[in-house]
Each structure stands twice: as C-alpha cells, then as structure tokens.
Amino acid sequence: MRPAMRANTALRAKKDPAVKSAARLVDPRIHPAALDARDLETLQLFGVKSVIAVADHTAHPATPDGLFAHFDALLGTQLPRLERAGLTARAALGVAPQVLPRRGLRQVLDALPSYLRGGKVVALGLLGLFRADEREVEGLLAQLALAERFNLPAMVAAPGTDRERVTRRLLVALRETELPPSRILIDGAVPRTVRAIRALGFQAGLTLHPDHLSVERAVALVRALGPERLMLDTAAGDGASDILALSRAAHRLEKAGLSASVIRRVTRDNATALFSLR
Image 1: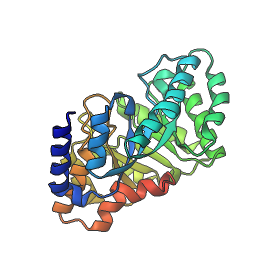
Image 2: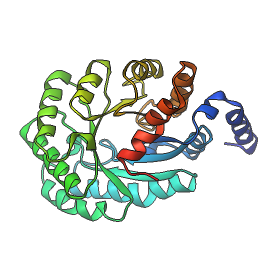
Image 3: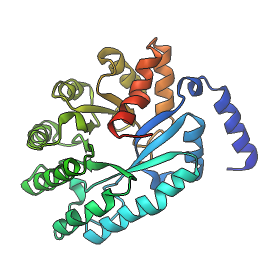
Image 4: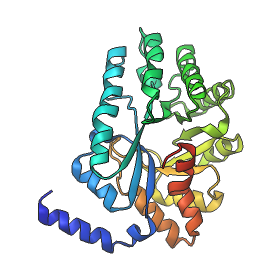
C-alpha cells in the first residue's frame, strides 16, 4: 500500500462507526500465511487486538516432516510477523483429519508436547473428523488427551461434509475424552447445530465466512441465544474470507440494540477466558 493510501485507510478507520463499537476485538481463528501486511494493518485499524493463528490442513504435505515444517513456520515466522503488525498473537497447533499422516502419526504425536511448552500455543487445533473412520477417531482422541494433559483447550472444526453422520460420531468421540466440554470449542457451528452444541456443554464458534455464516445470520443467532459459551471468529486467510467481518459484526450487534457487555463477550471476553489470553 502506498503511503497516501495507508493514511486514507487510517483516517477512514478512525471515522468508521464499526471501530468505536469494536475496540479490542479477539479473533480466535485466523490463517495468517495468506494475509499480507496490508491485511494485518487493516485488522488492527478496525479494532482487532488479539488473534489465534490456527494450524492449516491445506498448506503442507500430510507427512510428519510437512507437519513439523508447518508448525515451525507458524511459531517461528507467522507469530512474530503478527506481533510486528501490532497484534497480540498466539497459536493453536494440531493435526487436522485431512492431513493425518498415513505413516508416522505416532512420531507427530510424540513431538507435539515440545511445541506445547513455552506459552505461545494456547490450544490444540484445528481438530475434528472428516470421514470419521477409526484412524481419524484415534488421532482426535490422542490429541484431546494431550490437551487434557497440558491443561489446554481444544478447537474442533464442525464437519463440512456428510454433516449429520460425522457430527454424531464427533460428539460421541468428544464424550469419550476426559477434557471437559467447557474446554472444547466446536467451531463452524450453524443455526441447526449451535443449540445442541451448547446444550451439551461445549463452546460454540460462529465463523463469519462465506463458507459458514454471514454477519447478519450470526447477529441474529447472538440475539436469539445470548452470549453464553458463544464466540465469533472469521477464519481470515482461509479462502475468500472477510477480514473485516468481526468488526462489522460488533457494529451490527450494537445497532441491533445488544448491550456492550453482550458484544464484548462474543467478540472478546469468551475467547479470552477459554484460551487464557491477556
């Protein structure tokens, strides 16, 4: 971005009503490798102060070496880049079902504890099930056991295909772990699943993304359900995402007449508490 354009962006940010209602937002799911410096500046200008960079399932080969390289890049390159942009950044690391190695999964699971120490990793994630076969269930349960061992929450992606069958198997698997439901965020909740997720004691993530939920539908859900065990995220950097979605949602929640306390809980406080952010 040229200097004049950067100055104009900053001026618009100061005048934009979304910025006033969106002070100190926390986005608990971004994919930073696809975000450039201009994107990161925009996030900060529009109220995002803290982010969690989540391990991808498409950016690396499904091998132990590919996973290690991805984890190293997330912690060694992406977190410092986010911090230099003025964002407080932490990571969620884990092996998604789509990239479970055919060989060497035990090698990855044995190495994960070394990544979980040091305070930069605040969750295991993104985890989940894709085909819901025995190998995926075993990989999920092993990582949930690590989360319990290291006193970390887990971030689990709701299934995108064969939704009903896989969701049922996912919920069964989550009940087999010793990690309390209140320590598990099921992200990608939609109107027909969010009530069941919360009724079972899990945290529900509403992802403001063209592949998940529009800002308008998310606002309607917050109005209908209230803020208990509910948080908003954007998956910024994952495909055709909207990096301003969280700020826009905060503004529209305010316009819809929700209290400042409710807005803070779904755009900051619930994520801060679950992931022990500062």
